[in-house]
Image 1 (cartoon, helix red, strand yellow):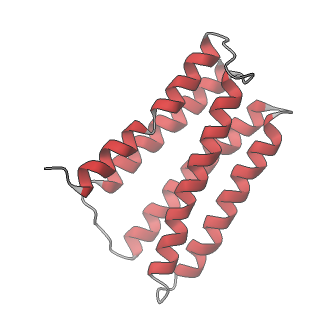
Image 2 (cartoon, rainbow, N blue to C red):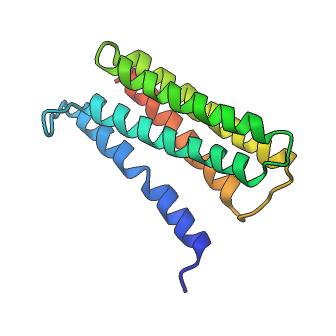
Length: 148
């Protein structure tokens, strides 16, 4: 039987595939649809960082009575602006864009972890472990793009 938890885990890890695909494009110096690997990587990364920022927004809305809800709402918007800044910078300097995005992933992960800890949320089971692994993988791939 397929559960919401298993779907969450599968979709989380499947989300790494476009990062890996972009890395292959970078390493093989391949252009696809008139886009190079860095463009694929940065645009996908900005979209996913914005998606993760939506988790903070949802958390702030769901826990509006909690003292951290305002902070979660503000942070979610700041992280989206960071992703947008990276996109704007990507044509000029993909290294700066990649670094901004890597910082954004660590910041979103830390903010989400802190908020969930303060709110004493342990559900869904396995979520924090998955987020930690995915964040580490994504930041590592950003590092590989920076040295490629």
